[in-house]
Image 1 (tube, one colour):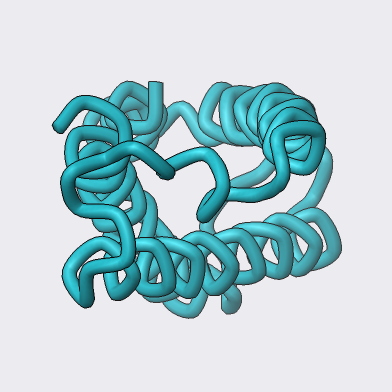
Image 2 (cartoon, helix red, strand yellow):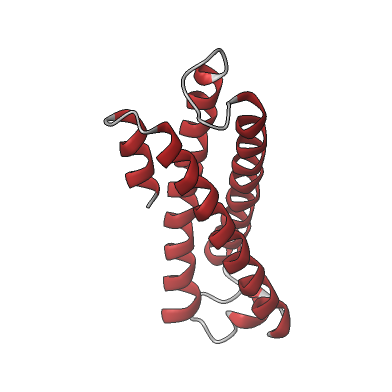
Length: 131
């Protein structure tokens, strides 16, 4: 969905479609993360949940947990702030303006953050829950 949203703006210059996709994707992920965090709290937290993994209490798994958490927090803050500023700086029917360069820069930072968060999440899942 993220890739499609970027493609819509880069290739098709469909700025309104990009805006709608980003807002919907943010709302869906916001509630998914809330449910995920609630579930983790119900199970005693991530360190309780990875008990039994062959990597339990290793530097590698602990580092992965903390690094993934840091990335996800920074990426979330970047995305939240970018959406807020974009809603303020762009009209209802968005089109390029003076804010566009900053939007593109922070959008790229956010995209890389999302990719890295996804990759570290997969690594965390494999080493924390499968092995």
